[in-house]
Length: 346
Image 1: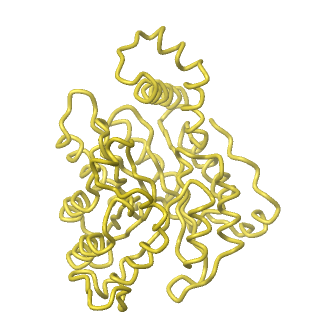
Image 2: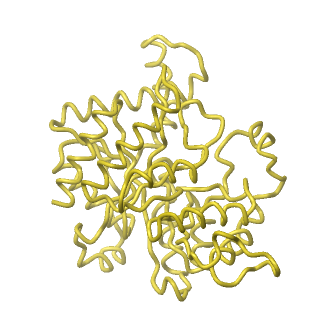
């Protein structure tokens, strides 16, 4: 099991009264499309995951915007959220996130305003500034050069459309106006932390795949946070990978398969590899760099996974954990989710 870093003295002081029952668990779902499947298969799996998460007591599920990726079907989070919301009753659903520079803030306000009117009190909106794809697809998205540079202004414009005071005179988002859909800034560097602090918004760090700057980003966010009317206190959501199983051996075997599949997908670039060739690729600097993305991973039996997440929560100074389930099959993911809920939420 990967070790979480030792928390700072300040973090220890602030988490002196830490209680895991006060730290909700949420899920991020990439709507994974496995070999030989259609996206419809992944959507059926996402619905099953959401219904089980709701039954088990998870707080929310987020869907991430990605494009031109054969293994990820969540390219349109708003549409997927609407489908899942129609077949669940109370779990929060949102984007983790919408890559705002790919879109007009008005269009996103209308989409998520529609969701908020259909499913009041259940819709979240996480916002990122990366394209969520490769440069060729960026051109196909018609993303303007330098669009990311306008991200802070676009966030504020979107907030206006969803609030009670449009930032564009004469333009009202219908639906959207007055829905006050909760906004979260996503990040994997200091930029998002600084922006979230400046705007007085909750901050979600992508430590499930970009672990390097976690502690520094959270420190910057908390130490420079400017309270807002809606969020008088900072709020940190930290993402972490989890593979829970009935035995340590089974969990480690599952996680090894996940690691091998990740290197195969990310480094093989469509080539068919033998197991020996994959071993060599895993041992290469490129392979090790890919595996380093999974640095924050809890792997083991429920008690050991729970103990890891206790340490990680203190390290990340997190108010909420966003769980990325790392198992090679649907059945194993559902079992992992159930074991984690039983351990964490009793």
